[in-house]
Image (cartoon, rainbow, N blue to C red; front, side, top):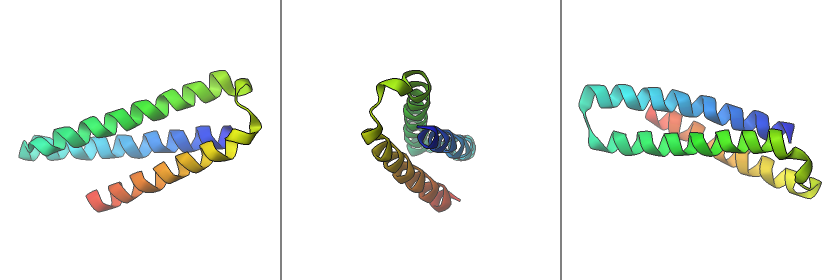
Length: 89
């Protein structure tokens, strides 16, 4: 559970970086698609924040058999978000 929490917090950090970049792009270009990117980023960030809260508060309720799947989901998400950050830069 701790590994999933740490990876989710890393996801939030990368998403914050993406949000700042998209905000700068929007301010410079006023391109409408960046609003969609910003919305997407905020929704993913909300997902990760809810996951962190759930892991911290409801950890005893999750069976141990689920924990590797949670880690895999968050690692896959982190890889995807980092790839998006790299393409954006």
